[in-house]
Image (cartoon, rainbow, N blue to C red; front, side, top):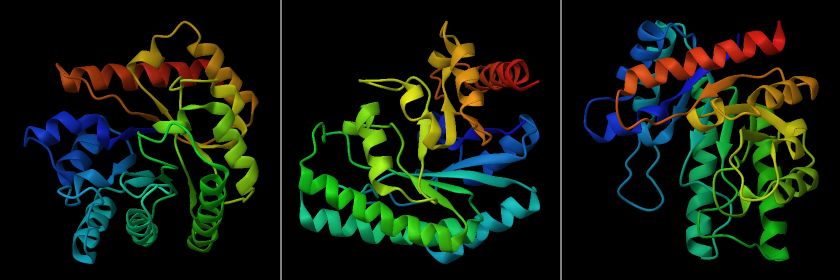
Length: 261
């Protein structure tokens, strides 16, 4: 089964000073006995500024060595603060510079897919000019991703990307084989999973989606749409963290067995 565990699941542990990148890798491998990880750049980058400072090569090489030592595959890197659209042109330029560096980092780390958001949380609408820029930029990133052997694209994460119809329109406009969507099941303000399922390159599930009455139907829908990628738990519990994450992984595995066997 293609099961992974998102690093953001340990956000509270990170903030409490109880976890770092290498502790996360050790936990995934030896506590949960997984062979696949979903990295989050917030674990290993300077988060003091709005546009985070990319990690230097030595940090990335250390992470790669730790991955290789544990024989871990990077199914996805979720990149924050490198989103495509910002109304401020200077910030937009900084974000693009960051995104290009993140794609290079993903290649170095051997990632299969990279999540770069379309926008930030305050972008609830997008002009046609902004949409055209977003399409052009994602095509550029997809060209690079194809060269690197990756897939790239946004998640239904924040802002207008929480509208499934808008996200589908974006995917149709970019129209690139190295572009897709990180589908976070059930995370929508408008629309639903089925509207973008054909573009999914990676899937996130959380505690809310795992207990939703429609979850088995959603898994079957993705199976029938042809999805064969990785499924990752991204669940950031506030208490009993390791037990809760263990439950979520077990629930995910159970659903996958029911769906694909």
